[in-house]
Image (cartoon, rainbow, N blue to C red; front, side):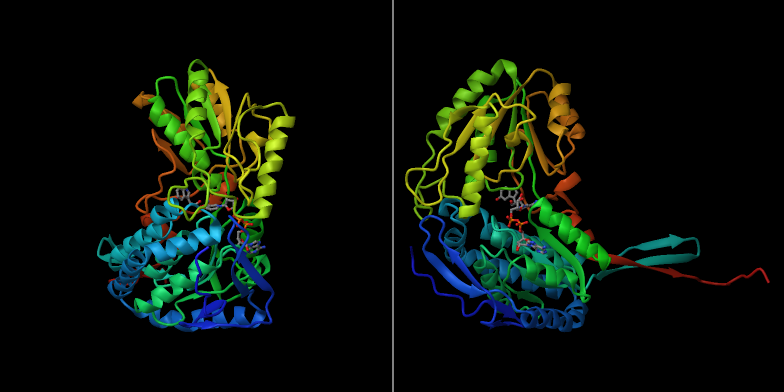
Length: 485
Ligand SMILES: NC(=O)c1ccc[n+]([C@@H]2O[C@H](COP(=O)([O-])OP(=O)(O)OC[C@H]3O[C@@H](n4cnc5c(N)ncnc54)[C@H](O)[C@@H]3O)[C@@H](O)[C@H]2O)c1
Ligand SMILES: O=CCc1c[nH]c2ccc(O)cc12
């Protein structure tokens, strides 16, 4: 493991590192070997208050700057992230265990894209003029105030940027709490934003477990909460935010369907099914883990997926040849293996994998099940691990009914060469993000988010602006004012 410089302290508030070693210790380990990467402390009440006080104090002057001024800082931060992509990617690999081959292209890079995108549109965030005869109205687009971001562990810097960039572009300030399992890259983002010229207090990072997140959500100074996490956490955070009538964005879990029709380009569909289940060792919220395949092509499709999956290079995530890494944590490793056992016990056929990988560490083999039925646990519950389930279907109507028969609604995909069918199917999907003849592409220019239990609101694209600002309506009477008496 490369020697990484320990962060100067656990938290970043008001443009500088801050420590309070009265907090609970928070140790982050390299999932490939269990070696300690860094040792930090969770926020005490005083750190939570310090961060919120800083964000509240910075609010007025940040909101008073022009969009162009704010945008310039975000774009500069994007440039610095790109210059330091390798260093940030190594850090992300150490924290998450994801292959460097992935983090070099998907994590900080997506964060930079996001800062650049919102940096570019910041100057154009305006209200509108509404002519009403001789009277008129106009709207003023205002920031919400102090926002709180709470992150999951699978895409730490990407999640921090997907929240910070739109929040800051709209003139809000932010306190971000990364997942307790991946605390490091958000601190680097804070350093970079300061270097890019961000005024102190506008972006703050504090570490902690769920209770720190809870303390942030409950604070009366907070106007908005954006959570990326599981559905059970989402329910708690949404309920707590509702007490204070706060705005929310909820980016939660999923059990997304991927429908492969018999007229699909099989090579493309096989690649998509592999990406949709094994990229990041299956630890992606929008993964297409229920792969519905039309009966006629199922044997060949399954054979091709199996053959290609056997070529996965499982190894040290820091080796750029590795394309399949360990699970993030012992808990995620145990959960995944227990679902695999449930799959076997409930009668699915294990086609490939199914075991802890012989290399040791927290590796679970890429696993494929066929003969999966809709009622099985592996077809109903989010696993968040490398477990692909094949479900055969006969007709479009049947596939759609079964695809939608879930509490989740994050994402869905369809492979077919029949364009009419493709659009008909996505129109019927109960999911916030859909793909036709591809899967899991999440460019910043496209809104991302879920319906049903998978979430509320959208990240990225212009849609995110509506979730980080609100409109004040102003009616202008040009006279005279008439009254009944
Ligand atoms: N929709 C998306 O964009 C998206 C992206 C990535 C991950 N996810 C989902 O995230 C989950 C995996 O991440 P995880 O295990 O870190 O999720 P999690 O729900 O356990 O934790 C997420 C974050 O919430 C915090 N938290 C926990 N309890 C809290 C509480 N009561 N109040 C405030 N904060 C609290 C945690 O400390 C962590 O920072 C999966 O379900 C996955 O699908 C969703
Ligand atoms: O889980 C994090 C966000 C996300 C959802 N789908 C994808 C696909 C590829 C990524 O790099 C990130 C994500």
